Image (tube, rainbow, N blue to C red):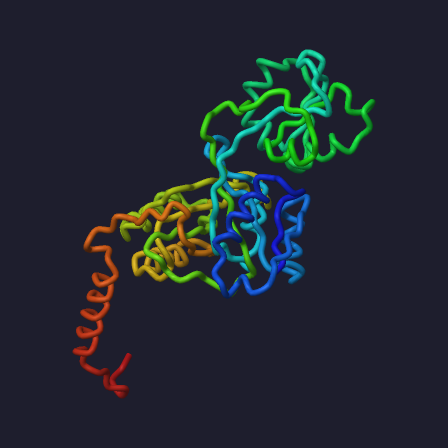
Length: 325
């Protein structure tokens, strides 16, 4: 198995992938996995669809910044991938440089934009006026800083994980610089379409839907479909479709598995309402939390209702073909 991740080594995505592999079932651990770093989720997804890698770990949501737009947009662009697992990583950042440097002598701080957003308060307070530069990942910021000459590195620093700073031999100037203690990022393990993990009873389903255009109350209708089937929604985010201004798709996480009757019934109704429904997978929740389900939304309630209708349908008088209208 070849696993892609947002690289280089020591990114938070790399940590999430290592966690996932430690929990990999035996049938997927027959051979030593090969870990392949990528500079962008879009590039990794292209290789996944081409069959060059077998799975991809990507960040999808942060407890401070919300959804990771790059991942959400890539997943929304194809219905040929499926999420099979999730992982969470607690996030902490350090400010690191090639050598010990007073903060007031720093001129440039680089990191991934999503990381920058999580430390912007600290940066404004402690290194005001410093140029903030974008990197493809937090680890890439540390790696690139370690690779330049001592002269080029003067006045430069990187926001990265403590592991990345240590791995690339950087000097830590400040620790715990995140604006919110206990921030967590959620990652998803994505494969090509074809395998849905079995129901565990503590599951999550991810969808991307596009609502009917210029139909008043369409979002309310979609939400009522979930509510009327006892399906709780744990995340909803809007993303522009891109064809013209004002058109949005919605990325949803709902509690439950497609094998649950209530979830399947909701998906059938959404499919009738929405011109586009991308099913992105049902997979075990990393926290193992089971949804609280009312008795009338349990599987047997749907099965009993189906059997009742079938019995009634069997009582319908057959139509005489000769008199049929």
